[in-house]
Image (cartoon, rainbow, N blue to C red; front, side, top):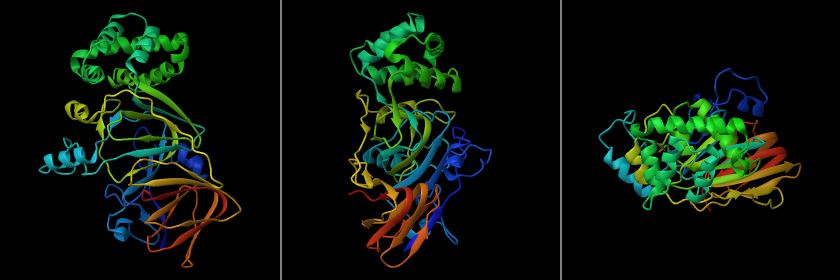
Length: 376
């Protein structure tokens, strides 16, 4: 079975008014266009050609969710649970309606995810920076009362990063938060922070979008990562992260479980966030895979999904089908055909669905596409 998939962009406030329109070669709608979901998740299943949605075809069994993501402003600082944590949280909230605003868990699954940049740069906050490096960054912010208080919290001996985040997200820290944000703005104005200048400039931009938000200071504890086009980041369970700006292809386990830690008007459950946070500082490695001919793979340590990028230059690319598969076109002219004789042209910004009963798919044309499938 070969089907064409589309969906309506979700109009989250952080979405870009131009990125998706430029990708697809159409006029902007005038509204924020943040995400396009290609999957069978009940939150927004993809539309199938003719009529209906993908979940009516798959029965809601796809292990992954594929998206186009277009961020003009920072997303919330967030973390995702492990499977065990999601199952426990889902069970604990079994008495709450799915649309209950106090609910943390939308399903009982984990949500590891991979983002690959489509824009020339894609900015992210990913993982917690080693404390010694953050203390060095704070030297560029001066010695005001707020910065001194943050430095003192980071000099503790116990679970210092978890404790510091807990303090920052408490109402008791708001005066210090305001002073630190002012110090970030002043340091960005001076533009004399040496190796920390890029990170401080990025966080000052976050502060302009979310003035007074404690998440701005939480962002100071995180690694600032800039992806180039084609580079990726894998974000595991427990890893604090926030996308800042850019267009990308995102794939994740089929879940909508998000615990937030700032930069959002949505509910923040600080105790639950801290219970699933992995506070161990570490650099999140950028995936810079080398192409094998026309195909570039992005290896990830989970079984839920696999993602490959295919560059078409006129020669067909043939792939075996191992499970329900999607082909998302991101540039040029892309055509998908199956061994059973079905064929579809895939316009940029849309996807084709190839069911598991097909043996192979053939991509042709001159352009770029991403192939999503269950993990290998």
